[in-house]
Length: 102
Image 1: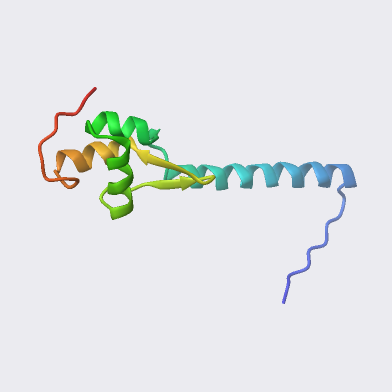
Image 2: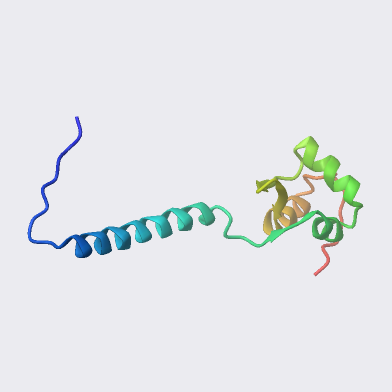
């Protein structure tokens, strides 16, 4: 059962203003939460290929094989730079030592 709230001694304009402010705050919290997971620098396939010193085709293959974590945002593929470098340092990608370009 839904709770009913009785509001008194508030003008309609004040109520709408307070409601809009509260909704704006909640919207920012939601956006903040969504981007907490993506707070790292996001890079695209060409940058990943440069860091790993491989072709873009190889990056696509590793992505498809699940060797590199990736994120789809608006139907575009992104990688967290720190995760790519971390996987590289742990030799999780291809088992070879590759010097990270800076």
